Length: 192
Image 1 (tube, one colour):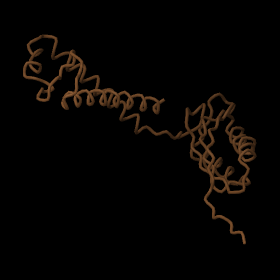
Image 2 (image 1 turned 30 degrees about the horizontal axis):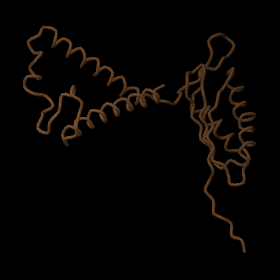
Image 3 (image 1 turned 45 degrees about the vertical axis):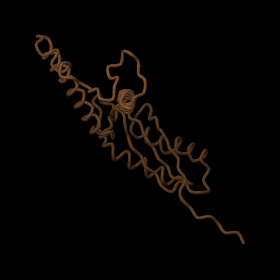
Image 4 (image 1 turned 90 degrees about the vertical axis):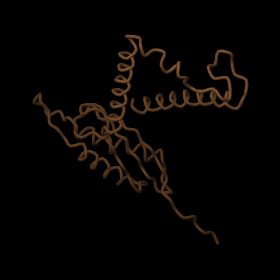
């Protein structure tokens, strides 16, 4: 969700800045602008003295300005803290049968899943990150395949062996996995 919020926020900010900047640039260069546009000449200023002092004496002006700025500060802090939040799952809740459950370190499950994925035929390197909630984890797996590996077979074995073993050993109902496949670098073979 954070990725979508970032994209929407940056897209809207960019669109507003581009439209405003383009309109001011068009007026500054001397191109024709619509009659309702506030800046219509080369020597026109963005905020005149009258515009800056227009609402100062109104009783509602300062509370509205302070409220809007406070909301912007709170939204900015929320966004900054969301950027720093750890995406990696620290612990996984394992159903132990006694009703309370046990906690398994997320790094331990990642390490086991990573080792088993790396031991599959055709895989030269594997990387696993657990995300989601502790009672419903999700796995992000990055596999670097060897040049002669079959991606379909490797992906099937990963789901049937490594992910299934991790799901069963942690007592999870499901362990959805997002897998990204990459090809390891290799030198071209010489033919003589």
